[in-house]
Image 1 (cartoon, helix red, strand yellow):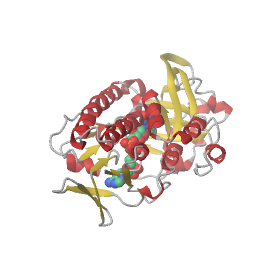
Image 2 (tube, rainbow, N blue to C red; image 1 turned 90 degrees about the vertical axis):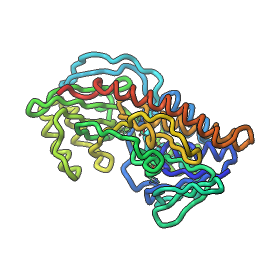
Image 3 (cartoon, protein in one colour; image 1 turned 180 degrees about the vertical axis):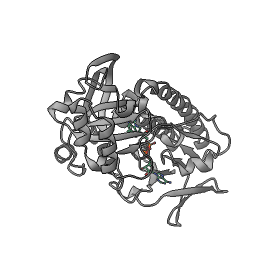
Image 4 (cartoon, rainbow, N blue to C red; image 1 turned 120 degrees about the vertical axis):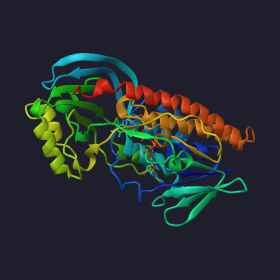
Length: 382
Ligand SMILES: Cc1cc2nc3c(=O)[nH]c(=O)nc-3n(C[C@H](O)[C@H](O)[C@H](O)COP(=O)(O)OP(=O)(O)OC[C@H]3O[C@@H](n4cnc5c(N)ncnc54)[C@H](O)[C@@H]3O)c2cc1C
């Protein structure tokens, strides 16, 4: 069996590992020109589903490296005001593990070699009379396999063709994501799982600022050199991840980081100096405006079982629930397990894919609904 995957993101790469473990031939086609071509370095909170999926799919020799480059994430979720006075507590979360998306993606690329083809976006597909599927690639080429998996994220080209009626809603408002190298002073802002600052900015605008700590147990590059010398991990230091969300949108249009930062500093004028300094000292390459989106639920579709979807390509959700990556990884592990049964002659491909889709749609859209329900905990009242 040959599986084509559109998208070398977290879900697509995790699936590729799971399939290789089962001896399935897999090729991943990625739109970006290389693994470093886009801003990707924010912190992700892995839950039990995400971790179990990574352990099920990644070769065992990489598990110790994954643990070494993860960070602790447990404790109270605090709400404070702009002078850092405690307002309320959202409850203890104790099952989190922090990972950096860019580091995790590099780790997931380990051992895949030329099975991942960069600079080759999937633009669409054709189902062929012999039961195979051809993925059309942006450079005019094509690839043929038994199954095409759209793991190509929120703007999925595969979903657009498979489910042209599926809708992705962009949430109103604007947000800016940043990260700032971790110092003792900044680490104290997040004593537990995470901290939400709710305050009032310039001109009376209500503002939320979310803070999360990414503290690597071991520096990723060094950990790789010791634990898996063939794996190249970036030289990323620990940082504090923050998201500023004002109730009134910031100026729109393309703006460079200097201009965005000036708007933020104006907005946060008079806030506690530790919070203002976080913005001042942000890492330029890894800070940018952000928009939150969610997918409207879709029923299980009739027809093709030669093309399927996973992760943000089908059930994208706002980061408020911390479940997007976890759901994408869970999909990858479930699909890998399902296809392993097909590879071993214990199931037929169309039935197996249909079963995967029914389960994935159920928990995936439950996670979307939960994340949308949790938005008010994080967004400022207007
Ligand atoms: C600020 C922020 C914080 C977050 N925090 C968390 C968190 O704490 N916990 C959590 O679980 N989730 C979190 N998420 C969500 C999480 O990052 C996503 O849900 C997750 O990355 C989705 O994985 P994916 O593999 O489906 O898609 P992606 O990781 O987006 O990968 C899609 C890949 O497909 C490629 N691609 C796109 N189009 C094509 C094409 N036509 N052909 C080929 N390739 C293509 C893209 O370049 C990309 O590499 C957060 C997201 C943000 C923005």
